[in-house]
Image 1 (cartoon, rainbow, N blue to C red):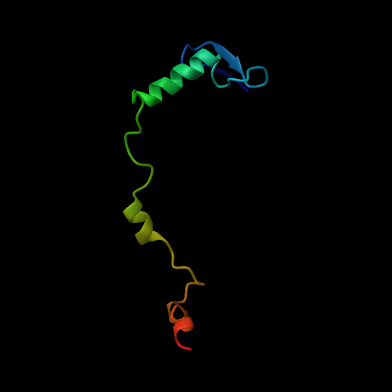
Image 2 (image 1 turned 120 degrees about the horizontal axis):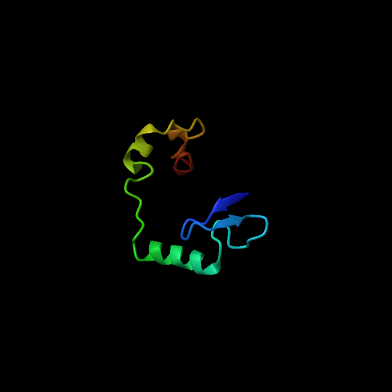
Length: 73
């Protein structure tokens, strides 16, 4: 796969470059530095955890009637 390096814009190829999608280790490390210094940020969460819990379908194997079955000896 041929792309341009996201740091310096030089052409790079996934078949010949071990640092792909970067053209060099230098560009790969510059990108890592940008993330660690918070130059790059994800502006919005990918999903809202509170919505995720409410929107999950109930598990058909999760039977509340059986949760206390071990206590009724």
